[in-house]
Length: 630
Ligand SMILES: [Zn+2]
Image (tube, rainbow, N blue to C red):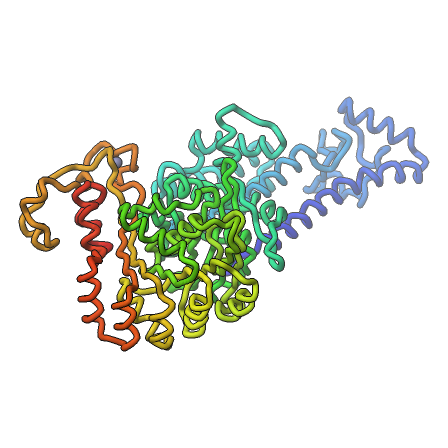
């Protein structure tokens, strides 16, 4: 069974078979009247038919001429409607050469056989349950069954043995495969059969059962595909996937991920399954894997929706599509990458309906909030937000933009991609993959005379220089830099090749940041921290009574956080405000140690020091703080 017969060839084979059968069936029926007319013995044939119906034996050749002529009366082989009665061939019935009912039954059995063979082939290879063995069994069993139909004199007996030869191995196969899959993916169970029935009925427009509607249509999420060229939404794409295998699984996966507040879904092929992981509050959590067949089908659905080439499995691709979930508009960004075991896919979930955070909602101390707000409302300058990927840098910038009066000021953003849509802000999406650069777009955007300009990220010398120039020429510029902390970010600009005096003149402040997970208030546990922990965190021991941590392994899962122990995230920030002293130090390219000393003198708290406030308030745990802030 190495070479597989494709679905198309199966279909052609079936069509040929049905065509042949119909031709054989229709041939005699059409031929009958004309033979009768030609022989001019219409009356005779009628009487023959009548006689046949009343089963009165008649000699062969009488009234109903046999064609080709029958061999002698005592011949061993007697065809069709003729039977030997008292040693004579007699017409015992009229009508077709074979039973139409039997034909339909056998054709049906044939179609079923092919369907089962295909199902078993795909299913067994996906689940790794002795694929070659089962394929041979089903091909063999089918062949034996059809032989039985042809050879056994009694059709009913032959047909029963055909059903048995297919049904018995199928039963064994189902038992074997069901042992390997979780309860929900078992087949031929009452639950599964009911689902199939409801789905089949739904296809014919019949709705069965009230709460069963959810089983037919799956969760209330509707995918909106993108067309290949324009990026506009494309109903055809959405419809194309609706009838594909794995559609329900894809819907359930996305629905579940959104309910669990995931930001990313990762489909990762393993040797015999497709593992699924969700990123929730910045941490990856494994969830129930798919078998490879379903997993590949789900991945294909996302690729079709994102207008990606589904035949390309090695080269990295990316695309985007949307979905509607109970009036919420959700955007997805999909990216694929070939790996050792096949293609992996990451799906970023951007919930457009989740409102942009306010400065107050970011989790800063009141004093820091005021300081940041003061900088945002300066007529010109450069505010940099820095941190690793996923530290919430752009969230901070969006919150800052929200604080700016976009009705009275000309606010323009340049992003890759646009993460949140904001009212009254000119958002420009650039596509760095198709050769557009931040720098190139910025030159033309500056001619649009923005008051406030947000640049998604500074990652090259040219963008850095333009940002500094813009800040120096009467624009307020917000941007992000990939750097671990505020002081490193400052040096990052210099490393990119911006002149020190440019940096010194333009930079207003650098905001270093991280996101820590908040402890679930329902299930967090208090404890007294040990002396070592307090020493490590440089906290005076007499100041702290208790810290909080997530509960250990408990039998009952907290319904609030699904047993994760954490719910949502909050930011930890360090704000480096560039004052005159620092400006001088930057201008002379002073070493980092000098700048560090100066910031300490100015009373800047590092992220770690800021984090201790969160520990004392029971907002986060020591483990979480140390995971995020090194
Ligand atoms: Zn909880």
